[in-house]
Length: 515
Image 1 (cartoon, rainbow, N blue to C red):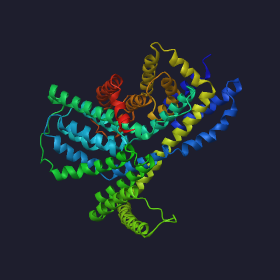
Image 2 (tube, helix red, strand yellow):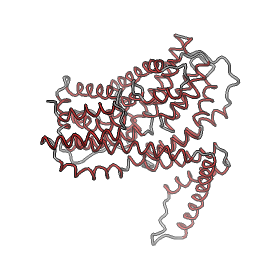
Image 3 (tube, helix red, strand yellow):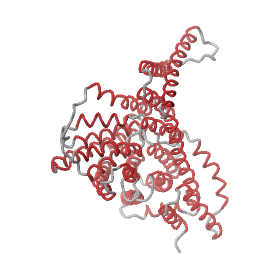
Image 4 (tube, rainbow, N blue to C red):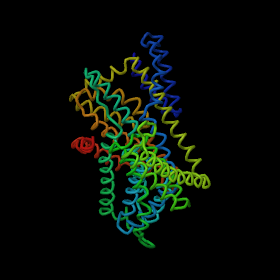
């Protein structure tokens, strides 16, 4: 008879493929096998006493609580038409060169990835705006579809992204667990900043690979990616700056704060959300002078308060401290006025309420999956699954390298059927500790896995990007064309993983330099 732990994992995949909601499927399978294990004597129900502590730890995790704010930032930016402005401007900028529209899609995907990180919104926006333009100009529909799907998924590898936040938490826990098993009591951790820094260069590497592929294909097969037939005029420098600078400023504010240790992920996500609200107000008709003044006031307040903090409750606070506090209060009031004005404007334009609703839906889905995955892993470990996974990895031919090849191949295959959240929170806590104990660098491992998990958005039949584009693409672009179009980009992802494997410094040099 097949062991219960292996049967449990197989049942999970089977029920998910039947189309049941993922969180309910995970919890249902865990409950079923906990009862089966209890009646067969393979599982102790006493372990369920740890479930409350596990749920509390997830809901109060200072890393995971940044997810709602990052999601809100991305949704507000998506609904404030920044994607449309970027696509239209970049299309006019690069459209006169062969393959130029394709290059503009990749660059816009990279900018939106670093500012919004919302894959669905990016793919749908580019599918509705860029895909018809590419088809009108004679682009191969397979190339166009694959390019939009691949560029849209850059939001999962270029920080900040929910994938990297979840992965940082999983990797840190697994790294600590591996150290305990090795008898180390001076425990090191992996921070979100380290994960962001590690993923930045690989993310840019993918952008370069996509651009090179488009240009080479346009040179080899000119009919696949011709230059634009008609172009009214090239954008001015001011138009390019107006489309690109808002996203770039927000990227620097959010990503720079995390990478340089100025702010925690929660604080950086809050900065990003406020910045997105101000940008939405700026785009939708608020007083530009007030918005810019408010943003400058908040920026000045952040810098000044960090350089010269004021504690009025201290007994030695003097006139200078009160004067500085008054200045800080004035800056805060100006900033709050700009935020309130932006919120009023986004309410009038019916942007804010849909953004908040979508944020709640996405956040609920992510946390429901994480909570139920914690339940699943508790039962799986109780059935002996943790030891079985370690035994399988240790039995692989080729030692540590063979085990890693097996793990990466297993993750890649599961990506055809499962979402990255399910793989990250169910499978990785079991796979990572044995791999780290075999001597693999945890930061380098995190980068390899991040690129691998990103591929799950592209791999048929259940890649989310394929579904998003199918919903936004015109009828003449068939599902088969979309599936065929992503194949070269999946191969480019595998090439990126091979390059990171062969040259670990691609993923480890920046974190070592900064941390």
